[in-house]
Picture 1 (cartoon, rainbow, N blue to C red):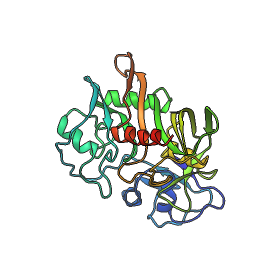
Picture 2 (tube, rainbow, N blue to C red):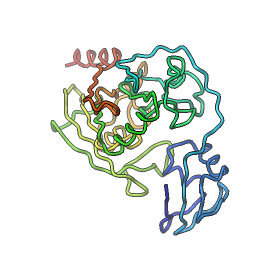
Picture 3 (cartoon, rainbow, N blue to C red):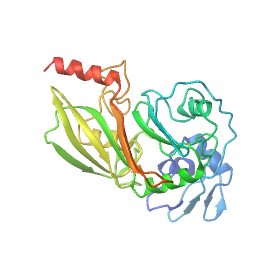
Picture 4 (cartoon, rainbow, N blue to C red):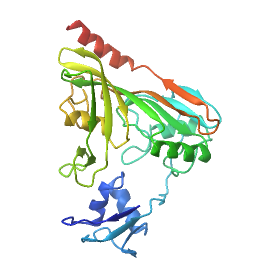
Length: 298
């Protein structure tokens, strides 16, 4: 990846790169110290002060030494063959180890389940082609070999993998359908959050359809045209209909469950056989139970 510093952009290199690398700042610092980040072709320190027209080259092939343990954690496997696994991830499960999450992740569970996982993303993310947030439940694809992983990644970049989500939002949505077309970048006031912004942003498009309206709430089906970090959560909050129980962007109406966002279906062509694949999984029981309480209030 190559980035050119624009006019009026300033600050430390490690902080600046948080807009471009979806990793912790400690990881970015290691990346810089390891020589995987060059400024104008030269190795610099993490606290280097960026200047207008600096050309930053980023090589993300850096691999940390890790010791991830296989753990016997139940997996809800929808489908499996020699090339991929389709998993229904529960709300509350982190996808891969990271800061503060060395165990109990989907990767720990996968490593116990099988030793056949792609290693393109290194030891920390074996098999992981794409992620969903910790508190989002639902369908994920896992690659069992590098060929399948590479082809799936290419399909993702070309938007050939169609993902749909179900979300419960606060407020009664006024129309039956809508498209949100608003660029997303890092929130300048809170680096943990993303935001709709024109600065260092990427195009993001989300299509939504109303499934049902409740008193004070709306159940939505959402289709991603792009796949930005926190895209659905950011877009819905931006238009004034935040996801219920979203810890970053929403409201906490039910502290006993995570955010009411579920990856409900996925469709794509099998990367090896070319067969049309479609998988769907229902919302979690806790999600259903909460909807039933809303029904009772009608």
